Length: 100
Image (cartoon, rainbow, N blue to C red):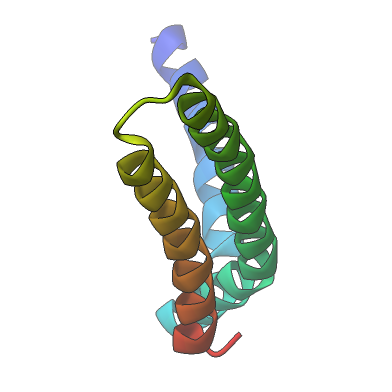
């Protein structure tokens, strides 16, 4: 019996605080939208940084293959260049799509 009361005393404050902080659906969606928009610039900069790192690693890889005289250097260079362009284009398109 005492155990049941302890559980009830632990749950009731949580339910009361949850109902005190609850909002209607529109306010929650608007808050989520504003938070996503505030993180979007940081995410775009992160995508550019990842593109720069991939570009540097790819450039070193292509340079090594070129100096070794391997025949697939052009294929590796085009896929490296394509991945860097893809990251930049995706970041730019997402910026314009979301209107940030």
